[in-house]
Image 1 (spheres, helix red, strand yellow):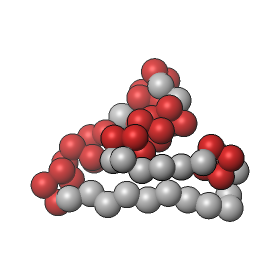
Image 2 (tube, helix red, strand yellow; image 1 turned 120 degrees about the horizontal axis):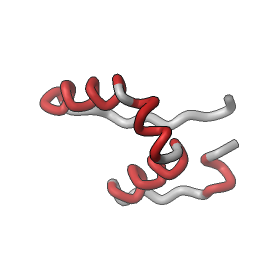
Image 3 (cartoon, one colour; image 1 turned 45 degrees about the horizontal axis):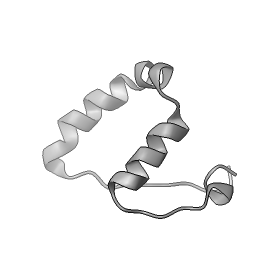
Length: 55
């Protein structure tokens, strides 16, 4: 792995994030990690270049 992405989580959302992580395998059966990551980037108004995100 040559790169990474990280996002912060506010303390008020910690329980929601923990539950999401616990069900991560289920989520990725329904939707790929790549699709989910793109949605997260769009939701927060971030720009990216596909050629660098998936190295």
